[in-house]
Length: 185
Image 1 (cartoon, rainbow, N blue to C red):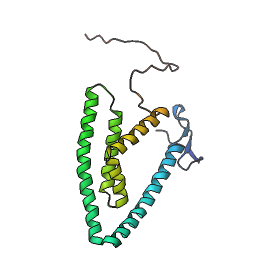
Image 2 (image 1 turned 60 degrees about the horizontal axis):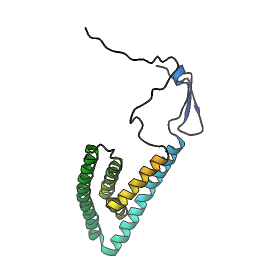
Image 3 (image 1 turned 90 degrees about the vertical axis):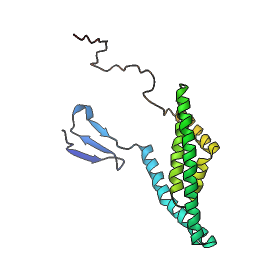
């Protein structure tokens, strides 16, 4: 096992430079790219802001209709949301199976299934703001529109499924290409 002898801080706090390792691993080890760091920043902001928004709405609704009715509404939306996610989840699973039986890639259906999973998670989170997001994701037209936009964006930016379909072998220095056949005695 080769242990780095020197770690030097680079441009990003997550990015390190490894010196004195074996030849195949020589160079920079970039653990997180710039886009991934931006994603973590956005997620951090979401996890920081959403609880404050939820607390604000719970206080406002609680002061308008009372604490007991507010708790009742939060529990009711969680129950209704869980039932709707279950029904729509089974429908999405049926669409995925139908697409696969027809020999089609169920990309849109799988993304919709992911949105249903997110909808279920945010509907079980107590609060009215997350419930609004969850019920919006349970609306089939909104969910399909977002999924279609996501698939189009993925295809236009070059992000896709790697490894699907036939692959052409890449030629590397020192690689011998050929065919073999096993002959058992």
